[in-house]
Image 1 (tube, rainbow, N blue to C red):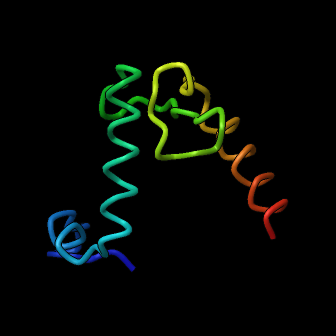
Image 2 (tube, one colour):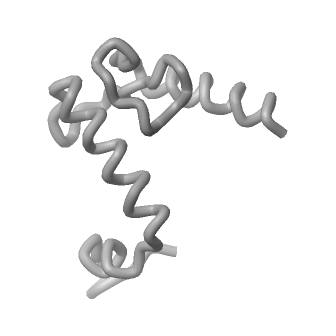
Length: 81
């Protein structure tokens, strides 16, 4: 459940409570979005072609719809068990 303040989601409290691993994942996601020039609020996702979220080189990234990216992630998770 997200942290709430006055009935609204408090993103500052959420960030302060994040684990080190979660912070790293968010940082890598933001780096990929920056590399592909996606602004905040853009509904598109950045897909890592080689499935390595740490590899943010331009030739490994592509912009896809949210549905495409989530479908690929679900298939990858199913294969890895």
